[in-house]
Amino acid sequence: MIKTWRWFGKKDPITLEMLRQIGVEGIVTALYDLPPGEVWSLEAIEDMKQTIEGAGLVWSVAESLPVAEEIKYAAPTRDKLIQNYNTSLMNLGRAGIKTICYNFMPAIDWVRTDLNRQLPDGTTTLYFDRMRYAYFDCRILQREGAEADYSVEELRKIELLDQTLTKDEKEELIDTIIVKTQGFIHRKMKEGADPVTEFKKLLQHYKDIDRDGLRENLTYFLNRVIPVAEAHGIMLCIHPDDPPFPVFGLPRIVSREEDLEWIIGAVNNHSNGITFCAGSLSAIAENDVPRMAKRFAKRIGFAHLRSTALLPEGNFMEASHLDGNGRLIEVIRILEECVSDIPMRVDHGRVLPGDSEITHNPGYTFYGRMFALAQVEGMMAVVRNEINEKRSR
Ligand code: DNO
Image 1 (tube, protein in one colour):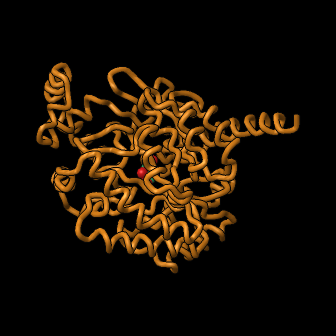
Image 2 (image 1 turned 45 degrees about the horizontal axis):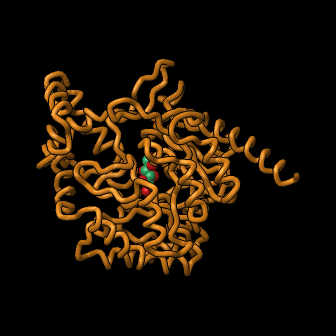
Image 3 (image 1 turned 180 degrees about the vertical axis):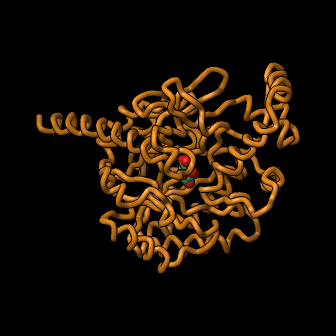
């Protein structure tokens, strides 16, 4: 696999020079200044490409070419937005960017409740605490009917949290769940807007959309964009839900083996691909991540390598890249055997000494990711050796 790195553009304090020096081969980036739905012009794409190539690297993946919410909830404007999406696809294809990552998570991308959970060795990691999430859902968001999603015991814990969480902790929960995590991946809050009110408005659009409805909207989208992707030699790779279960009463349709099976069958075309995010998929016990890698290998165009530690009571956190339910050694063995030429990047590094001095987006530290990349590189080297030996026998 090709070693790539998510880079946040010219404003990213982690420079392309730094990346070249640590052995990164390709860049994963997006035109972050453009809101979802807007056309990526050929000029803007070429400009980004030249910046990357000027530093001796290549632009391997566009992540994400974001799908506007209106497409996900089937607003009357969706056809126009799909047209824009296709124009961006064509422009990317013309510029030679052939791997594109997107997701179809309604209203909210990845969800964590704590961005700096202290580990015993002093480093910090991203964490999902089910009760804090539930507290946010029932008491901060006050989502209608939310209580029905929790057990009596859990509702009692929510009540307890209401008495123990400080005002600052409550504010921080809002900031973490709907401002910081969402902010850097395209959905910036409007200046001066109240995040909770904004998020509630967004949820309203999905009030009548269930799992089947969302599947229908994804099919509608795929039927219109995959032919364009195919014509330009592009593989459009859907990113799994993170975490892979419904949140805030919203349907999630890219979570399990059966979902991936359904998606690749919905439009049976090689351009309808998968971003194999081992980290997202590993956040529920029922997902056998290596088995999924094997089953869908032919449609995997891009890999996100990280792993999850599943904890009691529905909590989880990022595991070491050598550990956890992602079982990366096995995943790497499968991907190196079946799709050795695809780009991969590590994801969600810990915060290591020195990282707090370099401004970074949550999960996207320099040293933490460099450390993970070295671990992954080591696994890849061993696996490649094994494969070569096997093949020469
Ligand atoms: C979070 C990432 C996601 C992912 C997008 C892809 O850190 O895993 O933001 O890149 O959902 O569309």
